[in-house]
Amino acid sequence: MKPTLKLLSVLVGLTAANAAVAEDISVISFGGANKNAQVSAYYEPFTKETGVNVIAGEYNGEMAKIKAMVESNSVSWDAVEVELSEVQRGCDEGLFEKIDYKVIGPKSGFLSGAAEKCGVGMFVWSTVVAYDSSKFKTAPTTWADFWDVKTFPGKRGLRKTAKYALEAALEADGVKPADVYKELSTPAGVDRAFKKLDELKPYIQWWEAGAQAPQYLVSGDVVMTTAYNGRIANAVKEGNANLKMAWDTNTYEQDYWVIPKGSPKKDIAMKFIASVVQPEKQVEYAKLIPYGPTNKEATSMLSPELAEQLPTSPANLKNALAIDAAFWLDHGEELERRFNAWAAK
Image (tube, rainbow, N blue to C red; front, side, top):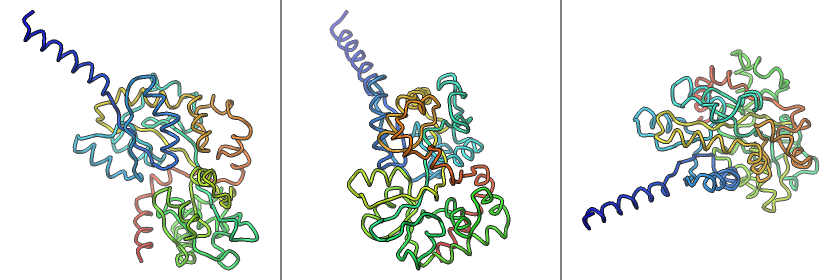
């Protein structure tokens, strides 16, 4: 072989080797403590097992970003965390790849509702009322307490979205969890929810990113806020022992892994999802942030102490409301428009 050809052969070999080493996927989550737990329980083990580097990013659930990528054929996100209503809407709109359960594992191995056509449940989480216990002699326990600014004076933190806010308003107005969506399915019920929100509006400090809710409590900007249970648990771990949660205000659902349609790394992303929904890894994740596993085998691996802290605990589910994704799929667009107009006034 001539020296030039030999050198070229070596360079080609090195390039191929470097390409193998440089293989990566982009994984997008909601950030914060959730992302940190995923890095430790999911991303790093996946890289160790496969050699594929996980580039971790975050967003606030903006489906418009995914839609723009898919429609422009420039998908740069390979696996993304989304909520259930977005799984179903995105699947209907052709924004997500169909899940290959031959790679992931049998659907029967997951909790009810976790094995969707275009998404795989990653954890069960709750929105709860969290509060600074040092501010009150009596602990707030209900949505009615959240609205009661005379007994529990101070600002309230509330996620700036119709979903969760409208359900909370109706429960604060005396509607039982089992009847919330029946009521919200009527024009009178929607009006009732907004009328109840009117009462609280002067006291609301809006939040959009999950990290903001505990920050508002710790800084004293609010005395009570809706929050993701895992974010509050993490804040307590960081030394904020005054922060407590009222589980009877628990509204729960699942987050899912999806693959944006047209991802050039679809096959790797599918293997990534298969890896991170394994029971042992879901248990490790729950140890880092208390969200419930979706793999049925994982539930039997949880210690009793950890199980009690999760949204999937029978005690925590007792008065909980499950988010109705089908309702939000049908009515979400119109209700979010009305909510945004109301919030802007």
